[in-house]
Structure formats: structure tokens, C-alpha cells
Length: 584
Figure: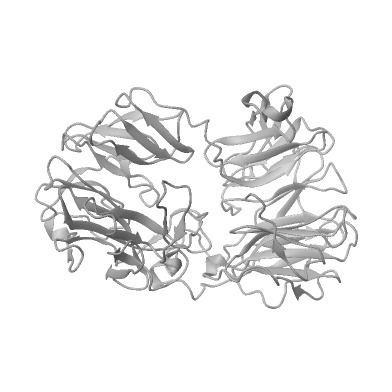
């Protein structure tokens, strides 16, 4: 469960092989870890609901339907802080079910990892979910204080159960008697590192001793989990999450990875490409100033790319030959293209590093603003990197301070103090386990999340923090004024700021409070430089939080907002919004 997790809205069902879908409930589960369909009756379905990542809620645990999703019944539940992450049938007997419960929560201040709590454990039912027994007692050989657990049962030996456990004594556990007793067969860190993110375990359909672990590579064991060797890595994926083996033809396999899915029909000797799947996960996009303009962005686990907005081949679309990979930036970072020279591209990534890439020479240079001060600056999954539209040589970067370079990254100057809250405290939506789990020493934990230089005045710069503050400077950073809307409580992330291209005193801010378990949309407008703010979200659904707001550079009053579930447009300066989905 990553810090950039996207929440869903429950269960969906298709009766025509995926052409159309119908929502069938469990709306407030938000995160679902596993779905099991009874092999003898497709109307019987079990769902492992993890629940709200950022707050307590009762719609979590294991749910069951016997009527194809018309009604749901909660059959395994611990408390409002504990959900279910994985399920497995006993092969040949769908009345026997294994379920992994996980008490976890995401605090707003850290990237890795989420918290683990005492509600986690492994459970077994032998009566189709009516009653459950915990089978993860340390007295029987299981790991103490487990976190996330992945489950797999051997099809050729239903008493053989494997559990991939994230714990202090983590690794692979095996039971040969249906979960009564356990043996810690492997502590190989390669197969269970970042156990809160991975956990996929698969057993060969025909040999209970052949088992596969999905992690940063795919690993295989042929001795019942005692030893593992890597059998699949990049290219074709970087983070591996699940492996499916066709029970009727074990040579036919499918791997689910961060980049998509790859297929093998020869038992894993060769794999298909994932380059045929248009599913890049990109956090930020930007454009350069050439014509036709190019679009650039950093992809999750796949590097940064730039590609033209217009094909060289007319209606044939953009080809892979026009797909330019960048060595600046990566994963979750921002890309900033030099306004005067589109061949110079700057990019950052998580942790705060910044690189400069020259597309002519294909050379990359580290221009990290804080390289000389490791450990002094905070970072989060994505940090701002943006050129000033009014001063093309000025590039800005933020951690808890705002930095500026005027010479292509050769020299950086901090132009602000720490702009975050001195003590944002612990939000009320966190449980005790999560509140106590922080890798950051001291009360100050936030970062500058948004930087927005004015297109009208190079000295006018806006900045927003992820712990809920909005700042503005009118003198290039010499002095900063706190202009936070009074309604903003700590950890109200300032996800985006859009200064007006026509009026220096006008700006718009997008506020994201989903880390407080608040999914309502928040957009604010100021017409007096931040002295007062008006909420402008009329027309945006009540559970659709806002990630970004932007201003059309040509048409007055035309605004766009990107939300968690769609795109919206306003033609009257934000007073009213309407969907702009088209074919999205």
C-alpha cells in the first residue's frame, strides 16, 4: 500500500466478457486486495476489503455474496482499523477458505512504509465463511506481529499452504497440515523486501515444492521454498506483484507488473513485451516551447519520456521512433524543459535529486540543489520543479524550502526559510499504531509541494506545502507572507497553485485532503493577492478530491480542474464547474 495509492469505489461486474460493467456495491471499501469466485457457482463471491487507507471505517474485512453481487454480507471482521488483503480457496473444496487480515494505515508524512497493527493475522474457515479460526499463532511456528500476508495453497497437495509474511521475522512460511503448524522456510530478503508492497506467492499446479515469489524480480524455488533463484527481471517489468499459471497448461503464464502484464507460453523461457500496452502511470506532464510542442513526463518504474504532440506520419499516430526516453527525472518526479532551449531537460525524482539532460549529446548531469547537505532536507514522493514563465532562466525546486538557480543548476540559492508548519501534529484520522510510527524525528514533517511563479511578475512567487500552508512573495523570495485560507487545517495538501496570466493579484489553489480521509473537493480563488479566499467547487461531485487547477492562458474565466475521477471545466472563473470527460 503505497503513499500514492488510488482509491476505488467498490465492486464491478461484467456479464459480457468485459465490454460493459455494472457497479454491484461495497462502495466505501476503497481498497480491495483479492476477489475469489466459487469455481462451482459464479454467484458465490468472496471479497477481501482492505478499507480506507487513511481512516477508520466499518466496510472492511471479508465480504460474501451468494446472489452475484445483489447483496453482500460481512463474514470476517476484526475492527474499524483492520481489513483483509488476500484470500485463497483450498483446491478442490471451496468451503475451505484462507484469509489474511492486515491492520494498516497511511500517515500523511511518510512514503515508505505504511504502519502495521495488532489486528493482522491469518484465518481459516471450513464452512464457507460462516466461522473462522486464527491460524497465525507464534506458538505454532508463525511469525509474531505480522503485517501484510500473501497466501497460496498447492493445487496438488491441499494441505500445503504458503504464506509470505511481512514481519520482524519475515519471509516465507509453510504449513504441511492446512495451517495447524508452520515452518519458517526462507528469510531470503529478496523475496519479501518491502513486504507491505509485495506479497505475491504462487504454487505450481502439479508440484507442491515448486513455488514462485513476486518481488523486484520473479523468484523460483524447487525445494518447497527453502532456496530461491531469480528467473525473470527487467526488461519486462521492475516490480512484480502476481503470477498466474494455467492449471490445464502450466507452460501458459501471465505476470502482473508495475508496467502492465506479460505472457509466456513456454514456461517462462520467453515473455511477451509490455510496450504494446498504453498504461503509463505519469504523475506530472509538461510541454516545451517548440512547434509542434512536445509533451514530457516521468513514468512510474519506466523512466521519463518526451514525445511530440503531433505525429510525423499523419493519421498513423505517434510511433515508437518518436518516443524519446530521458535520463533526467524518473518515477514520480516533475520534468522542466528549458523555455529557451527545448533540448535541455531537467527532472527530479523521489528523494529530492535533480538531473539535467542534454538531448543533443545524450549526457546527464546531476544538478542536485541539496547534494552538499544530505539529511538536512526532507522529501516526499513528488517534489516541485518549475521554470518561471516571466524569467525563463529561473528554475525553482522545493523541499521544505524553495531553491532557485539562474545558471542551469550550476548554483542554487535557497530563497525561503522552512515554509512548513512548525508542528502540524497528528491528525485525528490515524489509529494509535500509525500515529506512533514515524521515521521523521521532530514535529516538523512537511514539505513544499507546489511552486507557482507568476507569468506577469518574476518577483511574484506562490508556494504551498503538503501540511496545509499557502505562501506568497512579492520580492523574489526576500520576504514571504502566509496567506493560507483560514479553513485549511494541518495536512491539507496544497496540491496545485495557478496564478492568473492576466491579473497579478488573482490565483487559484487546489487542496487535497484525502490523506485526512476527506474526499471532498476544495478549490479556492483569491482576487486580492491572498488576503481573502472564496471556495469555488460548485458542480464537482462531493467525493471527488482535486489534484490540480489550471488557467487558460488565452480565454478569460476559463479554468480546468483535474480530480481523482475526472476532468472539469469552468467558463465563469470557477463559480460553476461541469464535467469535461468526452472519451476519457
